Image 1 (cartoon, rainbow, N blue to C red):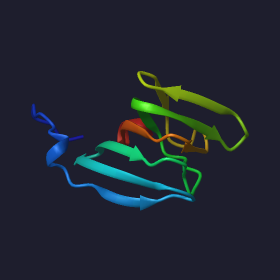
Image 2 (image 1 turned 90 degrees about the vertical axis):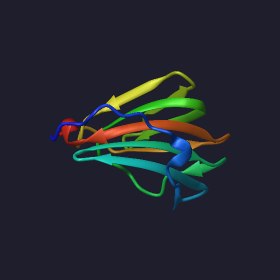
Image 3 (image 1 turned 135 degrees about the horizontal axis):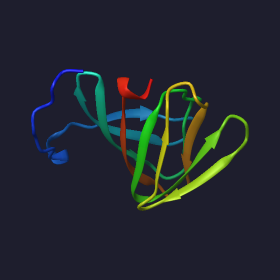
Length: 112
């Protein structure tokens, strides 16, 4: 992984991209630093992801609450201040929220 110099991130300066879910919408603000991706993600009310994800993540809940559902039926409720972590190919998971949520998601080559 290349060296990453010290820097600050002003999320107000990073453009949002829109991603439709099965229901609702996700808005991503993404910073890509070599094999490291840092995203601030907002899910709208009544958001359900449109796919099962097998990528590894560190997901920290900044505001609101959501459920991370595993393909095996397990459900984990996370709220403001909570975090989950998983490596690539360790689970099939997807997110859903009733009230909306704002997350900080970090992933990349280090989670393989």
